[in-house]
Image 1 (cartoon, rainbow, N blue to C red):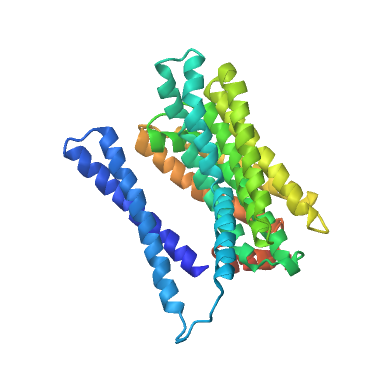
Image 2: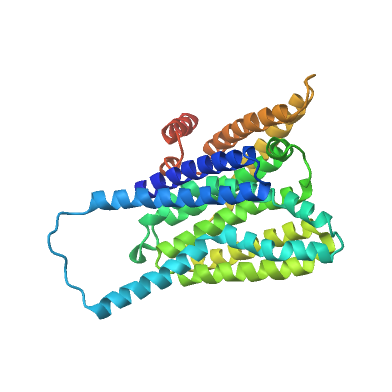
Length: 373
């Protein structure tokens, strides 16, 4: 996992750095916002090239000192290239789940809002709705970064490996925590990132999607790890078609709230189908009822603490501006994460070997052992 991890971190550092530099440079030079946006897109490409460069360096370092290469018939080479092309495209498309659902909105949401009578307000409404995408992506990345690290251990012959159950448990637990925590501090996070709290209903609905996206991406990775690359592609296709149809049905009725509901339902549909495919390969349930109940209890406790914290801080006699909301949100993240993790450990939702997948896992194990003692 090291080359993948290093390349992704380098990609984001270069991408974000280039986007910030190029967009601010072009704006200060008098270019329009759209031209600055074009410069930001160049920054994204620079990040991708940087990631490829890192992977090439790793590949060159791993090469063995073999002077002769084995001869492969041309026919076999074609088979290998075709295999890589077909499987590579399907794997990439399946893992572009979040982007593809967002792509459906890009093609359908604005025209549907205009047809529904919003006219000039349609662009503003879509801009507010698009605030939900960073929240979904951030929550999903946090939830899947732990669970997906276990997937490379899977193989055809080891479908009952505990890594599958652990990956699903971790995705569910962190996904649930991310949903509840984000909903509790959504107002403060919205003001921190976008200066106001417009679009609360849409963002709340989209935040709930994090649980389904986290589980769906984990299920897709498990299926791919078990050698099945076409079912994940089918799942994503069903999700896109569902999202498209639901947008057509719900946006004229509820505008951007309808689009948010359509996104939530599409992710839920994909999650159910993916769960069904993975569960068929297993001999026992992927998630036990006790784990679900204990996780909900831990999330409820975190919600109570966070709501109490927000109410208490709001009573302070100071200016409640953007900086104040930013501090509220950031401190709330740490408080919520701390309470949630402690509750998960004390309720013994995860085994000791599962806790090692988390940062400071050894300290969490000591807390669990102390409680047991």
